[in-house]
Image (tube, rainbow, N blue to C red; front, side):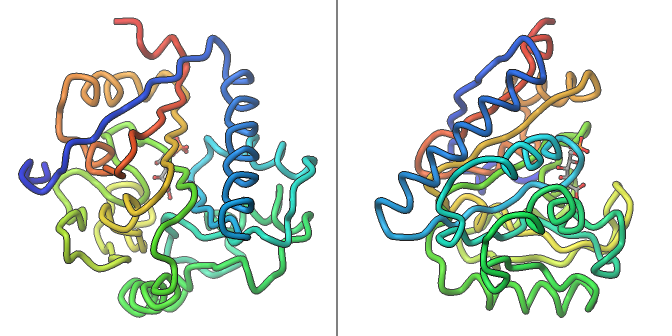
Length: 237
Ligand code: 6PG
């Protein structure tokens, strides 16, 4: 487990929804509002996408919405070290259901070059992120073991103040073993952080989180509180 002294006090706002569909629609509206606010504030919207399967229908819904796509800049919270067109790539899922169908300029969709190997890709992506002090919105999932992005229990979380922006992962317990992840420090450098948590399999991780267990998700500590969008059933003991 990560050392507690490196985890600044994370504050959570728990948003419970009775159905997955309601959670997804609420998430879409929150994302669009964040985009509007960011574009009004500084003329662009820098969003970090979550991987895994949970966000898929949210991304599909975004495809049909009206927003200033040309002001969007898309990043990824983590990526699996697989070929760019591999079905298991986080970027592939987002492209198929959403990004390939909206007018975000291609040069504003910043893929993690994970096919180059974790070490080189982490260094490359840290350079890509150098110009962005604060993300406007970071989307994250939650693993059954409390991981988020590719930050796993018992592994380096990158939550020290001088942690690099992106870290190479070689022994991820969730396949594939080789991945690139933004560090907890970099994921915390955001105006807003939104966790998306659905599925019975996440019950124990949610319980641990709410009981103060130092799971990797608890290491994401932006200045503002993090918003956890979850199914209400996961709050029942
Ligand atoms: C990944 C994700 C990972 C994911 C969680 C939840 O590359 O696997 O970044 O952190 O968000 O494991 O995955 P599901 O949404 O599929 O439950």
